[in-house]
Length: 189
Image: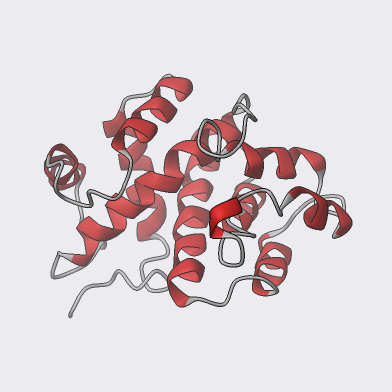
């Protein structure tokens, strides 16, 4: 495989991931990665594909996340740089693969960040469609809101990117807006 495409990533992910919430998470991270690719002037479909596939082994091996990713993806012909990017999102949690490229740093950062964005969007009448960074930042500052999302990890990722949380979140929100329907974030309207 020369390059991982979003269609191929969905096909590969579908062989391992069946739970709706995990498929939705893959789609959220994919949308966020597409927006980050745009920001860095990179290949949007490629970054979306990596984002979509990042939790390939999580459903079957939640206690050994990313330990069952490298070999199966290599056998399927996924390029080494993409496998490395996927492994790097577990840096300091379950892998020692440090994010170095913009793609790796972005994936590391948006993986958790999309959880807070999704939770905030779900509380709004129009979902993410009219969400502004100001209302996100209010939720971000409330440590009890989406408490399961690791804010320290997100900030560590922002530091790696040399960006402020506000700026990364704004990019992610815009990226997720483009996919509001697929992400089930259009609100109760």
